[in-house]
Image 1 (spheres, protein in one colour):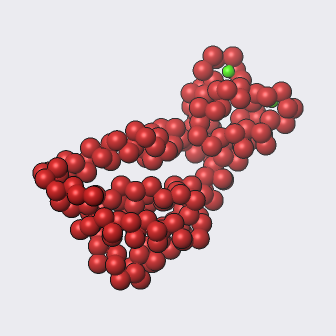
Image 2 (image 1 turned 90 degrees about the vertical axis):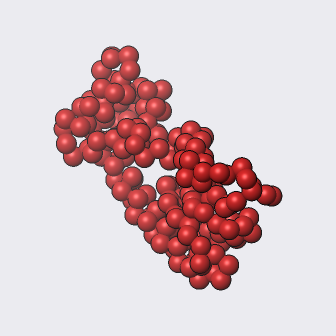
Length: 177
Ligand SMILES: [Ca+2]
Ligand SMILES: [Ca+2]
């Protein structure tokens, strides 16, 4: 697959591609407030998240309302003590702290996966010399950067996919024209 001449301004092309990719994968938008909610330890932060999720302002966060927060449902179920499928203010405090704990555990796992993928890429003779950056979110790896040919990109994807803990590989690698 040739990309020659289509990429006249690699940086612009890359930015456009990144924007496209972010649109396709909302989970990757690091600046999205839903992905970076305030921490549970701070009561006013807990209040702010509650207000944001309680869309109909009835003083409860319903299952439907909670689904607006990515990966919140596990904490929702655990914190819904009276099993009425909605979180009261008190239940929400518990849910928020469970959610924070899970996020912290995921971040730790993700940094480990990132380190392992980088190490695997460095060891490979085909891709060691190229500049590919690695980001991991909930076990999903995003590779980005520039390579000289499609084989290098393919190889980087294969190596990343084989690393333990990698659930999925997203490819944002641009083949230089
Ligand atoms: Ca509500
Ligand atoms: Ca409840």
